[in-house]
View 1 (cartoon, rainbow, N blue to C red):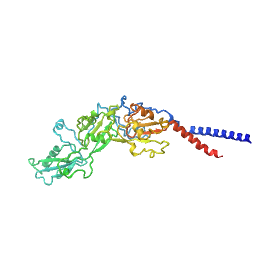
View 2 (view 1 turned 90 degrees about the horizontal axis):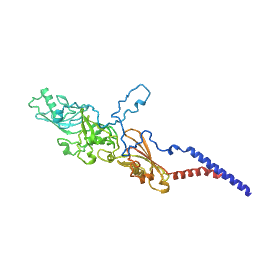
View 3 (view 1 turned 60 degrees about the horizontal axis):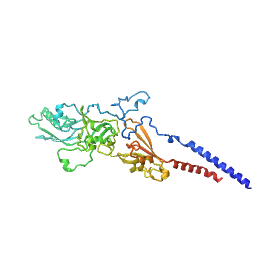
View 4 (view 1 turned 90 degrees about the vertical axis):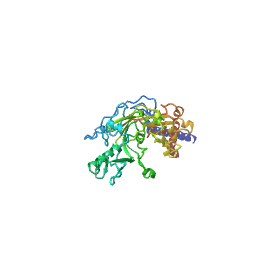
Length: 430
């Protein structure tokens, strides 16, 4: 009886060993070996969030892409709508749709800010009943004055508009030249839209100087004149989500009516005096790129982002979801200038059991805004903690980066063993 019992036990052990081997083979076949491969950046080995790298080389402006085609080949449309990068040596001149070219004499004579569509003025003149009142520049850039009709106003300063109204009244034989004296005052600067391109996070047309209803005190509403603190060059740059770390702040290009000037906004970050130009409709802003990552620009300011969103994932065994791991809304909205180590701490990737959690890894996926290529880097949590002072190990994060934490080999082995036990547990019942 003891011999048969021993034989039965040996067969049972062989069955267990065979089951374990079969389970391991099945698990090995299900493992995705792609996750075990080293991260490779095929397009560009330089990570954008790492300072002290050699600059990227790019064209002054991408050539125009053909938009309409009868072919089904879509390769020619892959760059349609892509943002442009500009060097700082030779910006492109564009004409304004609302303004006519001015001469250098006019440029020196008129210091007042030209009007834009939506601006409100007050027209006043002696014996001007029927003409005095408040007027708004329409979408076409004209003032509609009784009797004389449309007066071109967009792109012209108030004194020029007054002269045009006087001339219109004289030509309409409403006033004599000696009595037609018109005064034009700006009552309200409206919101405008200006295009911003170059080294900003979200290039395109932005709207600035937006105001809420009843935002001004009554005394300010009735006063002559208006001051628009949100209709400045710096506000347009900030409305485009701020400058990138490769921006050339001392040579920002402002184009108006075919004229261009270079504006130095670096004092906003250094504390030096800055001349912040007021804008009008039709202006164009170009932020050139140095091609190099400048770490001093990676901090909140008037022309850089205050904060941004980072997508995080930390699905560890002790926390079955991001919510239970405290990876929520406020932990993923981080201030500008945050590095990978702070993101790892915010995602709860750091700390815990030393033997099992210290070998954990973190993967960062980011898009290089200059080249448009996606880059992926992998760092050890322990290496990140102990060598956070090294820029190549602890890079800066950029908006919309993705961060994922991976468990250590010890945790992976434990889960594999637990999986084998779960597979074999039903077999022990036979």
